[in-house]
Length: 274
Image (cartoon, rainbow, N blue to C red; front, side, top):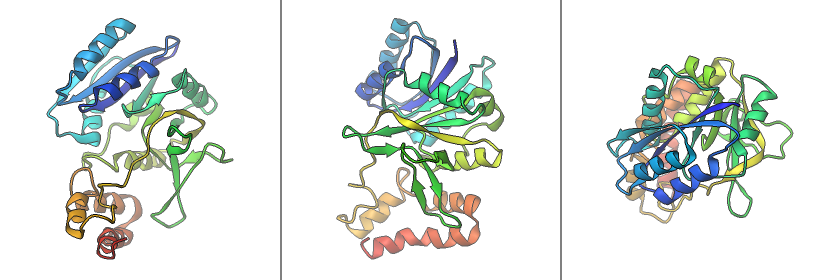
């Protein structure tokens, strides 16, 4: 029986978290849970303890201060997990708003066994069956990326949304955790580039592992209905596209010239109301 450590961070969405873990758990696997409770006040930690007792699973909950955001929470969990001596066969990083299909984790493990040592990006869809999250490849010499779809003939990725991301634990142990420069977004793509640099391949599943809604642009810095200054304010927030983090990501993974140009383009879009 394969052993899997499930890692996620959560902040005050108890119903989504409950639906996620109950859909995810598989009696055919030895599953353990490592959760960062980032300042939840809605009883998430207590619910997870009851879930673990009911399913007879090991669970460890790390308390955050409510300001870790996604990358910070996942990084805290990864660092704590690396500090522990016990190991499992796989690490599964998830977003707790994914509702998993039956036996999805087992299928992801079977996909990894077709190319041992690879990481597996689980593709997700919305209620209508439209792809929402998964893997992508960057066009040659460009910062723009092309999404992969489950019926594509080639599903090897350069980067992956880590809504459902399975990796051999030994690969995780050697690679380490997220880069500390990121607070919310970009950490997953940056991590994928690091994996690629170390010769680790990423394969997207040719099937959907679960349901997860896409990221709506309403209320984000890309929302053209908002005033320009409001878009700038949102862009510079932790959950937007903060200038320092974005420039760091670009310079690290695409070089200084592209970093300078693509750091400016979001402001040009806002100015032009695009």
